[in-house]
Image (cartoon, rainbow, N blue to C red; front, side, top):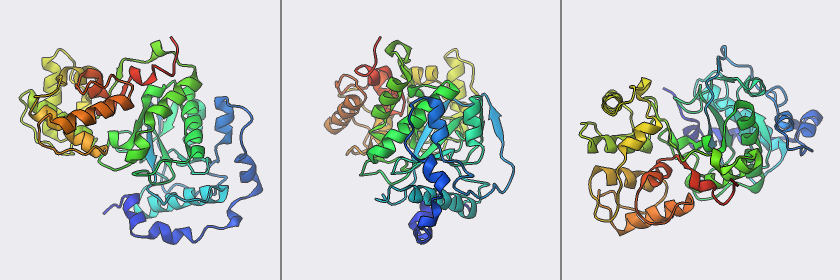
Length: 381
């Protein structure tokens, strides 16, 4: 039986390990590496990252696999650890060690699950061995264990803390932004390629309060990259696949039902859902995607316009994902006043006109995608 690290924390194993924190963890070399960089260039940010060797990581228990040319996104997490007020490099190093122990000894993984970790004090650490090697290359990434389906195509970043009701520290957000800029620069990614863990899995991670800051994080990354507004696609949808789980999968299933497919709404992307997606793609002139991957054109064709008076499965699709994101609604399949108000709030968050009507852009933002309107006030041209 495998255990999620968040379950292990709740049972007290993480708290027990916390007593091991001591000043001896900060060697002079690490303390120097953690000093503020003098340059904001991607190279200096990479050099700023505390390596596995520097925080004395355990060696992997088995050979790690490197993928070439597969990196397409960044997936941000929170650790579900307590929101520590210890912002020191000692705490950051303890965090990296404790996570590795939980992942290897509790989950049975070969190494730390994520590629990188950002502490509440703003320190950036290499998580899984060879993550820095891949980042420096700009063409390879070590296959990780942070999110099934995204482990070989997404760079996973853990953010220290629990952010369901609280937000991260300024230092964490600034360090996260710098790290995302470096990752985007090295791999040729963009701010519109930054997602949250729950966009692909059934989890409370990265937390309601943190997730609502993602549009700002993406804007800050885009500005740092010098992105022009014209370079941002109108919509970047979450390309879920058969190993994906969670509210986005449930929304997909509700939407397939509106097109006549007999699938059962659940958090699981089952075989019937894969078959329905592929059949839908063929019928709409698209090649059937492997693993049932829901591509941008597929989402575009799936979603209907919704508003006051709408009822049925498509409304349920919107409601259940808004509920997960913290909006106070009843899942009743009726586009009522509460649903309209939640939609308006979602639109405002993503820079969309707050009409309360679920159009194509609103669907994208609600389902975890990124819309160009997020960047209107931040970017030129």
